[in-house]
Length: 124
Image (tube, rainbow, N blue to C red; front, side, top):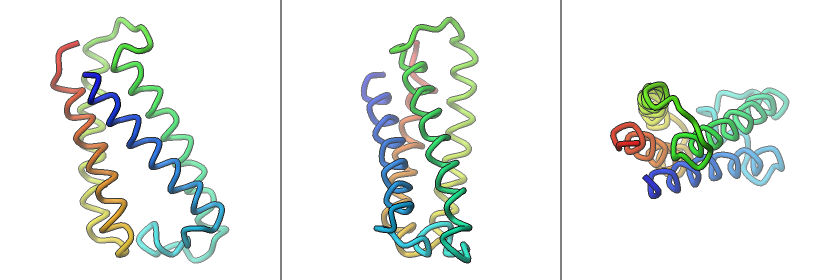
């Protein structure tokens, strides 16, 4: 479980880093979101929301790994399976995206799929 939690935290940290790099202009906004963002102003809210979702996901990962105490074993497992489905769908979407998404983002999302899958199937 410790490895799964570590992988999950790395996944969310890398996601935050990518969006911070997009907001700071180091990564062009045309490289993400399938290249569909018409302007930086259109991409900015997407990146900010993604950062907040990633922070929430990181906190959930700590809860699922029992680093933060909880008593909802079954609910945590269901949410992990939901994340497996969502990140699997996200991985497929990355394969239809820009070259940056295909080479970099897809590997990061795959890390999220694997970590949530491990958290879903391991005993708590």
